Length: 76
Image 1 (cartoon, rainbow, N blue to C red):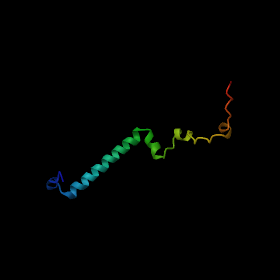
Image 2 (image 1 turned 60 degrees about the vertical axis):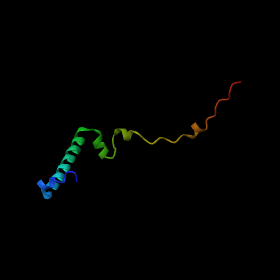
Image 3 (image 1 turned 90 degrees about the vertical axis):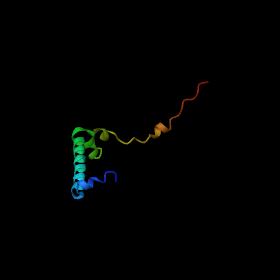
Image 4 (image 1 turned 30 degrees about the vertical axis):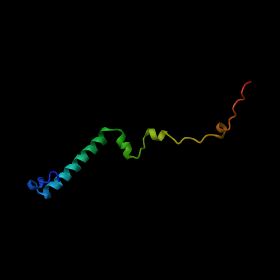
């Protein structure tokens, strides 16, 4: 380990929970910051239920009339 000598100064019973607690606290602060300062993150947590997605529907199947159109005869 690169910084293995730190455990000579700090007991692992204190240092490991301190590092894990700092990591969890930093992660919580970042997620709360994103949640309160963005508009897309709450919609992401709701599964994408927002105005844009509710207005978009599946494309309709092409109608038989648009498939069976007859091209005009060429002029001679």
